[in-house]
Length: 282
Image 1 (cartoon, rainbow, N blue to C red):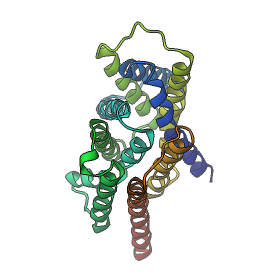
Image 2: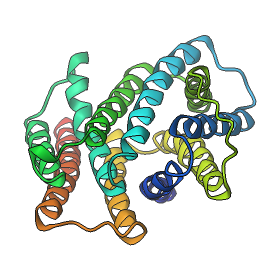
Image 3: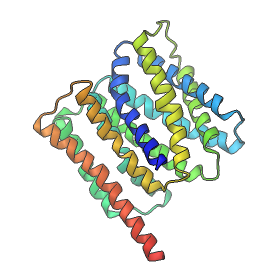
Image 4: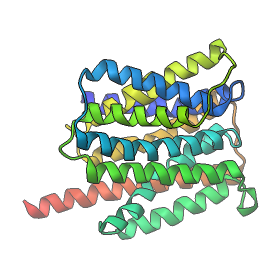
């Protein structure tokens, strides 16, 4: 289906951008990079939407956009201190963090989620080389995963009935405003490579990616969408190995495999449970 194909393309772009952003922020300050990225994303969404958001779309978009901005800030700053492969894998923990946060909204916590969380966290410890291997970058990326999970939970509870495009526009605008208001302007003019990263992340990995995701979810179930999104860490790992030359020792490789298994296994279990539930209702 076209929706599945487009979502797979989105996850591939997200996975590749870990290497792209890592390279860009070694040549340009992190906060101004994020500022330019989300300003561009907002302008793209303004061109797409052509309409003003409703009042509820504004306040939901502002709240979700603030959480999204915090997540990207934690992820991008963390990426300056950890590898693209580690960042992509740890960011993927949002899949197993989401049900934990959803529990605060009264959603039942399933047994397979607890197993997945334990496996994913154990894999993360191995991925960074043991408990002593946790650096600030890895810790910030775990915070990023939790914030992305919170972002998904807020949207799942607050966005039903709202138009996806204006809501995405407000989120991009909120993120751009936060980074701009934070005094992140830089007098340095980005180089060509940095501009390429800004355009790719702003247009494709932010504006169009969020737009495609919200559009696709009008035709696919949340469980099926989440299962497709679990491919992002695998794309990030592949990009880190192929493009950045990242190599893993035996313990790190086992940890990476455990994280991927926990993420994918959790979503497969969730998908099967929902399928059995639908059969029982029928």
